[in-house]
Image 1: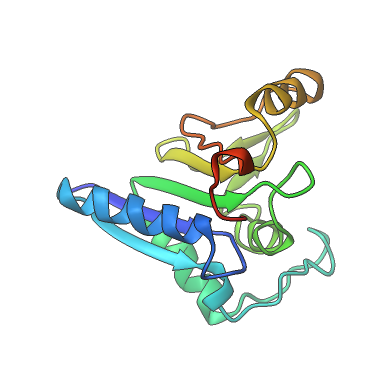
Image 2: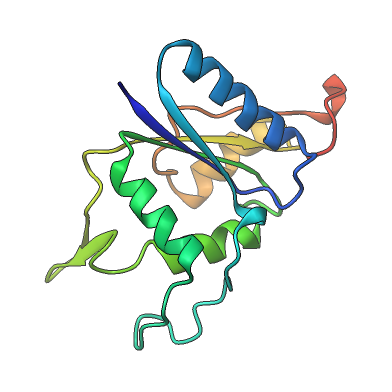
Length: 162
């Protein structure tokens, strides 16, 4: 049975992204997948990486549990809105605190190497900009990694605010 970990990075549990995450979970469970949905707003952690990678900050119990969930997953799904051209600060802080050296990547002489190459990754993002503007942003700022699934939500179609 496929194990899917869905991480909702939106700080509002009544958002459209939360509905995307719930719908993804419901659909995956219909295909007999074992799904876990984590709403980052429900976790108890400090999102600031105070010392960078120079000095290790002890992880809170919620983050230790999420690290174990990530190790047990076959597929990671990140759901978040695009605000000011990027993901919310809550998700950034989560990534900084959880995806640490020796857990998520190893340093090699030239570049860091991912420890999760065996896990499939998907990203579902909502944005209020048009598809054309989004593609121009990608074109002029470089390719975006791991975007096999992207949902564009546009205000002109009457979708709720992200």
